[in-house]
Amino acid sequence: MPNTEKAIKATYFSIIGNTLLALIKGITGYFGNSYAMIADAIESTADVFASFLLLFGIKYSNKPADENHPYGHGRAEPLVTFLVVGFLITSATVIAYESIQNIQTPHELPRPFTLFVLGAIILWKEISFQIVMKKSIETNSSSLKADAWHHRSDAITSVAAFIGISIALYFGKGYESADDWAALLASGFILYNCYKIFRPALGEIMDEHLYQDLEVEIKRISHSVEGVICIEKCFIRKAGMKYHVDLHVMVDGNKSVKEGHDIAHHLKDTLRKKLIELGHVLIHIEPNFESIER
Image 1 (cartoon, one colour):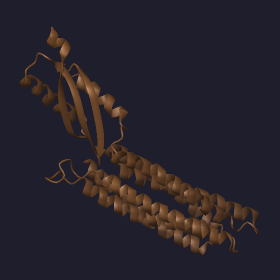
Image 2 (spheres, helix red, strand yellow; image 1 turned 120 degrees about the vertical axis):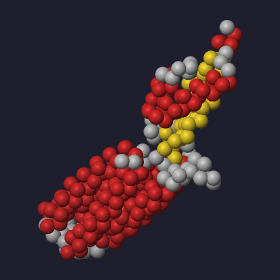
Image 3 (cartoon, rainbow, N blue to C red; image 1 turned 45 degrees about the vertical axis):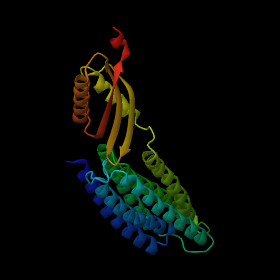
Image 4 (cartoon, rainbow, N blue to C red; image 1 turned 135 degrees about the horizontal axis):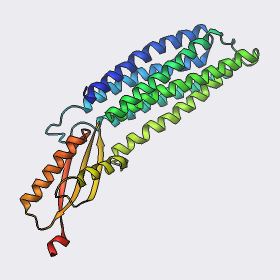
């Protein structure tokens, strides 16, 4: 199955799951007197909209290259990730504000049945995290990885709600606001996750060197190609699900331009065959001056 199709299916999985969970959490929180659950529902609702943005980003970023975009449209993916982070920051701010308001306002204890619902939600969100994270690794998708972290942050938000409601129910009167404190704590965790999602996407936009493992593999394969003496430079940048590579390859200085050209083409074909995640591979041939002197 192509990487794009895998990513799209994983995003649909997130959309359906988050929609159902937002409804379940909202209804449970309303009838169970738990703002922590309602806060959880708000985050899941934001996740639904974020997943729709990701779906658009994945589809657009995988459009083929054209005259105006010779390197393709892959940079759309981290840009959409920035919008997703904006959604999360907004939801965290709303949750924090409402939690503080509820802490200052007396209200009833949460209902015990909310704990059973939360237990099932925590289990489901952790399973969702594992599924989507696996797909993000398979497809090299930064936006899908952001979606996976949504599931993990949702799971931990639910854990905070579970702890808060448990404290409120165990200690009883006077501890009604425990689940509101849990919601406030959860908003802080959401903001922390925003940074974890934002930072890699920023690195992708800024062409940071973040792919040492891939560089090692490119060099290993290159050295197996006949005519390649060594790799002088290797620059990698990511755009969407593809990695674009610039290589400076050292060859025997006594070889003709045609021979150097053939080595470059053979190397490019070998790399793209063995590393399907590569997009453009630009190879610059450097002569080995020691061989020229001989």
